[in-house]
Image (tube, rainbow, N blue to C red; front, top):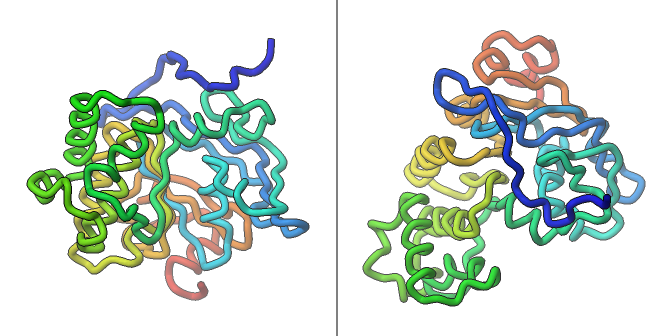
Length: 273
């Protein structure tokens, strides 16, 4: 039997912690490497990312954290001469199998980028864009999806009276929350965030961090950040990467207060990076 190329959701039984979140592994890397031509940007990474938790990736610029993040929905495929070895497992499937439907994968693994990338369309049409591509045409259904997505992104009350306004007229923080709403509209299970607050002021950053705390109840969130204080505030687990290698991965509190690896301690105490 060939691999399920549409990667339909499978039912699983999972244990839950005291906070109600599942301890089930959602994404697992097994000796995963990503190459740009001959350059090995990510080197034999093995890690298990749990469901409905926030996992932060930290490390100096060029350490491979964004490359690893984008590997989870194969965004790196868009860069010429990339190749991968090892496995990236999602729902029992290696997503780098040639039979995997990448469009379906990206619907299940949403992405929010460093800078807000709103479309030059209305606020409504920005959020409705993905559902329309998936075949939703009914106006009432689209309206319900847009409202719920904007509510989930904690921006509905700010924009409900100007849904027909051009999204380019929103503030930077509002645009980023709109991008989150647009990602949520296609009902992903995993939300990837690549430095989502690096271009925002402290007030807008705080709103995004509060939003991450709310979304964790329903989504697996993986965030790349240069801000170690942010990682400590928002994440359950933290991965420290250096020169493409996963140096340490564990519970955030332990990693920041009592890391196992001296290299991790040197980084978080500012001795390098």
